[in-house]
Image 1 (tube, rainbow, N blue to C red):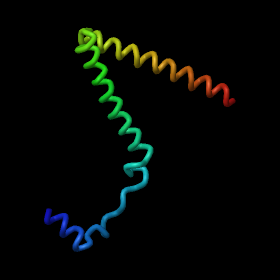
Image 2 (image 1 turned 60 degrees about the horizontal axis):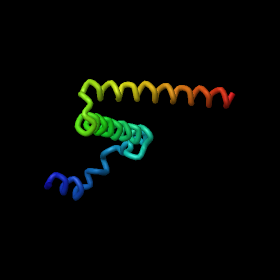
Image 3 (image 1 turned 30 degrees about the vertical axis):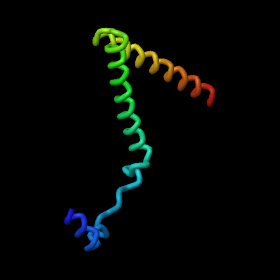
Length: 88
């Protein structure tokens, strides 16, 4: 606590370089990392739901999530290719 008070009181903060814009908390990079952490939490929640509420074994929930990932990647790939051809 005293270190923080001294840091502010002695204006030591003026000697520190500011964080570059691409590492700032509102940058695209950090927003993407936050989205990935939220996605991992959602996947863990889905796995728990499939095993506890639906009664699927753990390996089965992994298989369901893996198939969902493959199909979503296929759909995203088709959409991106379609948009790419459309923009040409």
